[in-house]
Image (cartoon, rainbow, N blue to C red; front, side):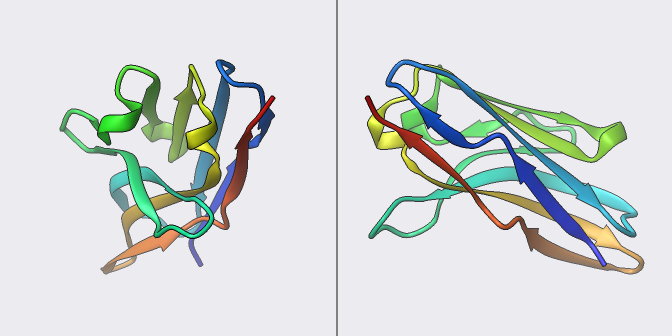
Length: 119
């Protein structure tokens, strides 16, 4: 059974920083993609950033220059350093991974962590 467990959300003032972490555990053979999505109230879930093995990270336009995604392959963990947070960044953030468990490749999601940017 594969699980993605997130941590690091919370309440922060505009201009502040937060660091999200997501650790994948279980019977994992390989991970091709790890990333973060977010869903704001009344909106669809949308990609924030992702990092694919051997490729440069991708960021959605609104977070470029403020967010940094990184991966620790030895720990099967992905991080999202969020700087210069704005009220528009308020959302539930979901970790995502496309990985191989035993013989099969599937997509997995974390349970979500709330990020609230407010004064």
